[in-house]
Amino acid sequence: MAMGTAITMAIAGLLLPGAPVIASESRSPAQRTFFLTLDAVPYTSVAALHSSGGAPELFGELGRPVPLISTFPSTTTVALGAALGPLGLEVSPGYEARFFDWEKGSVRGGGVISFFRIEFPWRSFFEWSKKGVARSAFASLRPVGASERRVLNAFGAFLASEQSDFFAYVETTDTAAHLRGPAALDNMFRLLGRAIREARSAGERFRVVVFSDHGIAGGEPLRNVLTGVLETLERVGFKRAKHLRNANDVVLIPYGLVSSFEAYTEVDTAPRLAQVLVSVEGVGLCAYRTAEELWVVSGRGLAAIGRRGDEWSYRPQAGDPLGYRAVVDGLRLGRAESAQGDWFSDLDWFEATWKEFYPDALHRIAGGFELVDNPASVLCSLEPGYMYGPKKTERAARLVGGKLRWTHGALFWEASAGFLLTDVPSTNSGRGIRLASALRPLLSGSELEVGEAPARDARLKRSGRK
Ligand SMILES: [Zn+2]
Image (cartoon, rainbow, N blue to C red; front, side, top):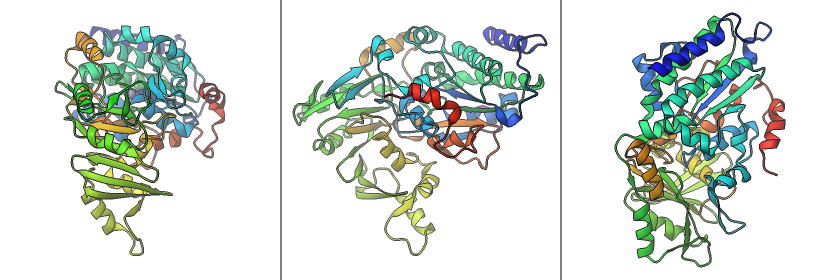
């Protein structure tokens, strides 16, 4: 690839004697860490690259990738909110730039002006990122090349900085994965691996943490469920509305092309709305809250999800909506004699479910209602092969990349499993890790008590909404 070669040469140039490289002899290796967030790169494609020996420098320097189980919805704002929350970041107002504001009783955001006016704290968290609507539109024409360039630029910015924990965010990998498939990013990983090795050969000492916010799933053209959702709602007497005035009003905010969606309605209407939505072709399951419980409904049944301190329970009322029957049987076998009922610890649930079709579902479904200021009434996850979004977005995507074949948002594994690749020594044995727990132990100052993060305090306050 001509463009790739040019980038390698540019990075090599940066590291030649006489080039503006910051001397690092005075720093101990543990003091500097390059955190690189790559949007929407799935565990599966990075693991395949690792197995194929396709990026020897990268895996030689950083070891093997591990699955990083994202949030539900497995989308950027929710996932990065969860990932960075333990570092002190505040939650965002909504799941996407366009969201339902419960206080105002109406839909807000989504425009170019509101992008800058309504604050999403994670956007201003990173030391290095390229943002803005115009930049994104331009990069979406050449997302793979843009991703290769940005990853190397971000790494160069880290080398030139004095920051101990340097956070970079590359957004164009999301566009590349959606439009070209995740394997199109293999060369980016090769270039990154070479750049890391070259920098170390030149005497730089640092650690690296590369991770993604969620996975991506697909391969075949995706079918849009929006029309089916709208027709079904109308047929059973719901009214799509902009405000919630009557019991049958439902607010939907299609945004982007993803494999999850949110619906807003009165609290008493949510159970019936979830039952109706889950009957639409392509909708895998829906979740909602009542005063006491969380509920999940799919074509396979209905179950209550309970939380009691650090414990969760999964109590099917009919069928087995999450397909967790065998998991629960296994947990019962492994628990202490004295334990009662189907309550198991958060850690036990995670260990038992991270490889399941719906990984870590109890914690993640609960998080779907807690990780934004304005949670949905009903949250739905699509089945593989489907997407949800406005027709005009679908047409725009088709102009750039043909029929959309890849997306994320859903609760199932491929959409949910991002990756973590790091040379920071840890006790990890190749098992999956929850995204929300992953970063804090990897900070250079991770000996700090939880809740303290002095180096980042000022910026966190700036990026936090008041
Ligand atoms: Zn993302």
